[in-house]
Each structure stands twice: as C-alpha cells, then as structure tokens.
Length: 379
Image 1 (cartoon, rainbow, N blue to C red):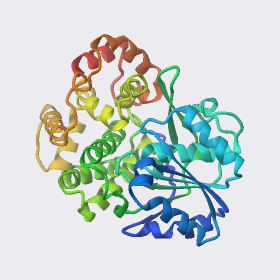
Image 2: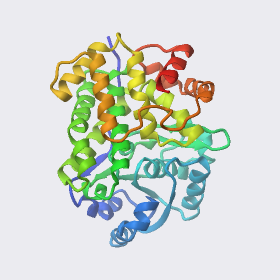
Image 3: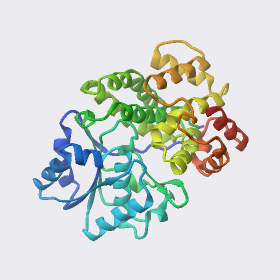
Image 4: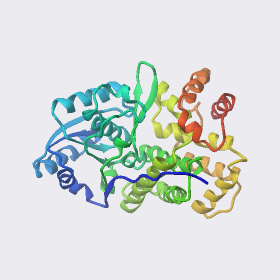
C-alpha cells in the first residue's frame, strides 16, 4: 500500500481585480507592518508599488518595500531583507512578482521568528518556530511558490543553490489576479510556463505520486499545453492568462505533495554555476531526463499525451512533440544553446548528486554514469 500525506494551503483569492483585496486580506491576518518584496521591473515600470502601499494604508497597515530582487536571489540578498524586516518589527510579509520575490518573502517571514541567517536553514525542517503570516501574489504563471513550502537561494561563494524547506513556509493567503500578468514579456511567459509544466509532469511521474495528486498534475499539464501558446502569442488574453495562473497553482500543489524528480536535481547546478533562470534550465533538461526513463515510464507518458493532446502516440513521439512545443516557445534546445561549456559536466554532475530528494523521487534510479549521459545528451 502507498502511504502519503496531503497538505493544503493557502486561502485563495482569484480572478481579475482580486489584487484589490490585498489590504483586507493583510488586515484579516493581523498585519500592522508589512515587509513587501516586489520585482524590480514591477516597481519601476508599473504603478503596482504605489497601489500596494495605498491598499495597505487604507487598512492602517504600514509597509516596508524591498524592490531589488534579482532573478536568482542570493543568500546575501535574503539576509539583507531579513535584517530590514527585523529592524522594522514587521509582522507580515507580502511577495509580489515571480518565484524569486515570493521565495524571498516566505524566507523573511520564517526568519523574523527564527534567529540566524538564510544559509542556516537551507535544508529540510530546520526552522524551529512558526513564521509570521505570508501573502503571495504571483505575477508569473510558473513557480507555484504561492502554494509550496520552499524558498530557494544561491550561495554565491559556493556557486550552489539550496532551498529552505519547512511546513512553516506554506503561505496563509494567495491572490491570483490575471491582470497582474499582462505585462509579462513573451520569453518570460514561456520560461515560467514551462517551469510550471515541469512541476506538473515531474509530480505526475514522481515515486510519491498518488491517486489524488495525479489528476491535479494532469489538469495542470492540460491547461498549460492549451493556453501557453495563446499567451505567448497574445499576452493580453486575460482568459488564457487566468488559466495559466490556475495551472501554475495546481502544479504547485502537485509539487508540494508528490515532489519533483531528477529534472530539478540536474537543473539546480545550471542556476548555481551559470545563473541560468530556473524555468529555462528545467525546460531544456526535461526531454533528456524523460528519455532516460524509457521504457519504464513509457506508459505514463502515453497517458499524458492522450490526456493533454488528444492524440494516441508513443512515449518517444510525445517527447518529440514536447521538444517542438518548447521550440515554438523559444526555449533553447540544448545546453550548447545556453553557452554552457562542455568541460563543466563533472561540476554539473557533482552539483546534481547533492540535490538528493528529487533524485530519490525519480521514477527510475539514476547512477552517476546515468546523470553524465543525460548531460552529454543535452549538449
């Protein structure tokens, strides 16, 4: 018999203009001083920062804004945020943007109540005390960070990525407003959308997948397969943007409850060593990791193909369809296209093997030599 645990959080406010409820939601969670992490682009190019401040002020909540987040946040950045939040006695955090902003806001919420530095808590279940409340507002449809228990940071000196993984990082509330995603450029729409697809397909294939998570992961894949091409070509399509947000959210539930697989283990070193954005790294490696699992996972890939494309094809044919799907969205097809030096394979393998939990979740056990072959194929 399969044993599993299901965890659900947060309370969700969804639909166009749901962002307007931010102040009300923060007040309900007992916020008096909010530490707000917002993407630099949103802060500089939109009125979202001013609107956030006003919505919180209307409920008597003071806000401390941090808008210097990079695409791959470092532990130094995270620690800077923690220091500011502690000094200002913040009692709630809000993340607005992509996964980097959301992860940072989650980590800060944890470290307001737990002493020390970000790097002290990278690993599993290292936070000792519950965090302050957290509200996550994704403006990309990709990471699913608004529903997961992880916050990932790069340790710059070591060139390694690591996540704080704790039940205390589950957000209390999420606002899914498709209007906030309309300014997302096509290439980021594509890379974040494929990140969500990776979460969905990996959680479907994971050793921890079960009768509850598999339909959720499948629906996320179906929504992405249908709607990502639409928003890639027409970013103003609100209905398709909304469905992409829901797909990312569902994929996050799949990730939180069934876990991801070797794709994530192999992609982490690309971010740590070479700064490749997480969604792009996952997408480039996905077909090659799937190929390594054949024929063991062939029947599952055929199930996926039938459910999301309506076509009865072989597993190999589906992987080729996936490569074409990624190419249509401008995703690089190889590590060579990402300008990764081929002599870095040993470093990549060493880094991948340290990301153990996703490797353990992989449907097929991978040896060091297997990982080398996947990287070689990806060049």
